[in-house]
Amino acid sequence: MKKENDKLKITKIKKIARKIRQERDDYLDDLKRATADFINYKNKEGERITSAVNREKEKIILKMISVLDNFERATVEIEKKEEGDDMIAGVLAIKEQIKKVLESEGVVEISAVGEEFNPEYHEAIDVVESEELDSGMVLEELQKGYLLNEKVIRSSRVRVVK
Image (cartoon, rainbow, N blue to C red; front, side, top):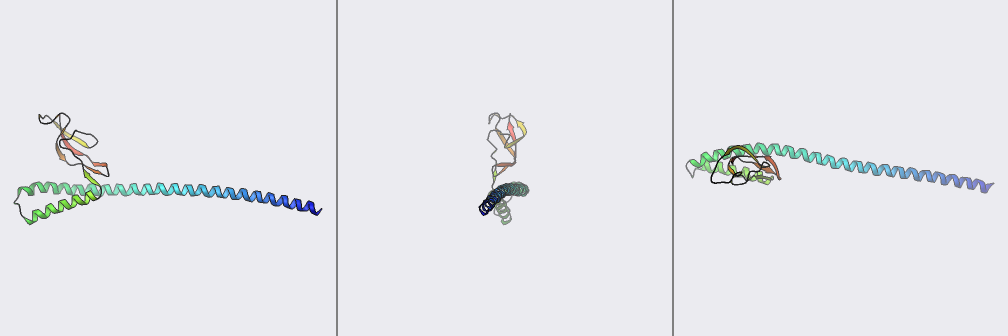
């Protein structure tokens, strides 16, 4: 009788042990899924934050480029004035400083004049005839274009040869 009771107890214990192992495996699977979900969430959230930061950075850089445009226009007028003036040198130094800051942030000017027209980088404002350049070449740049980390943030506005 005792042997039968012991066998029943052992059978019961084995059944409980199987059930516990199954629960353990289920919990482990749940933990693995939760961990994978968290890692995916963390990666997507990181990408979302990086994208938002890059969009805001682009907005600020475009504003700085507008300031640089004004310095470029001022430079044209300043160069007509008397050379050696400290104020002129100061304005030119500020313009160069802005250019260096933009370059350090990954901003690059788009080449235009003498280049073949490329709609990815250039926006044709006018089409003119010219004997100097072949058809489809950029004759004049009306507004500089810029890349930010190889992405066009502002196209060059150009005159193209017909």
